[in-house]
Amino acid sequence: MRFVLHGENMKCLIADLVVELDPKFENTKQLAAPFLYDGGRPTDFELKCSDEYLAELMSRAAEGVNVEQMENFAFSNSFNRRAIKYSTMLVHSSALIYDGGAYLFSADSGVGKSTHTRLWLKEFGGRVHIMNDDKPVVRLYDDKAIVYGTPFDGGSGIALNEAFPLKAIIFIERGEENSVRVPENKEIIQKLYFQTAHMVSASVADKMLENFGKLLSLTRFYVLTCNTKPDAARKAFQFLIENAPLR
View 1 (tube, rainbow, N blue to C red):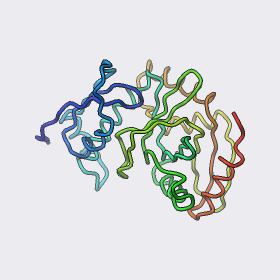
View 2 (tube, rainbow, N blue to C red; view 1 turned 180 degrees about the vertical axis):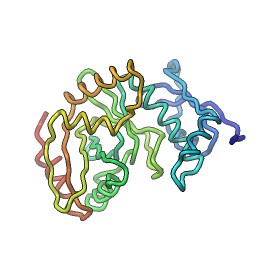
View 3 (cartoon, helix red, strand yellow; view 1 turned 120 degrees about the vertical axis):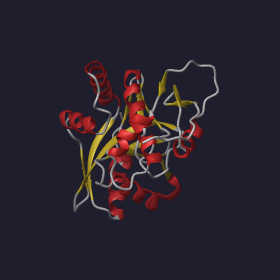
């Protein structure tokens, strides 16, 4: 399989990293456009997506996934692995912004993270918005964690070029009743591992684990068990924001 569209290099600023990529398809070009960078900083790394790699991914793609979506996925995959050494990590989540802070609602595909954050949009209207509905990243600094939007998405088209302080990471589990609990560190690490870029080399894995440890010290974690009714958003808001402990 060959994809004959002509690509063009795009220099972008993603999570304060200067990244060059050469997309062939309009989907990735359009999502990357708000991230274009014309400053003088050198490139931190380049992202490539060969025809051969794209064809391999398409051969294993789920039914209904088109080649443009797969190219975006390929660039996302590459970025999330390369960014680890810069203390930057994917958290597969829907990034909800409230009052200048980012709340990452994370779950396995199909559990309902996007369904839950859309309940917040219905319940709280203009007080909240979604920055990225699938692939935001967290960059770790000495004393803070910042959530950045990326030009990568899971099909929603929500991929804003924004950055906000991380307030909490919330792992969603489906249940009949709505409740929130604070998990132990062991459970947090297990859940983070499956919601980030974890198929990495041994040397990168060491840095990934270092990032996990630092993230534990910089933010709060919760497990939200919820249904799909509006009260789920109200319950989460009450616990995470109204009654949230100060760091």
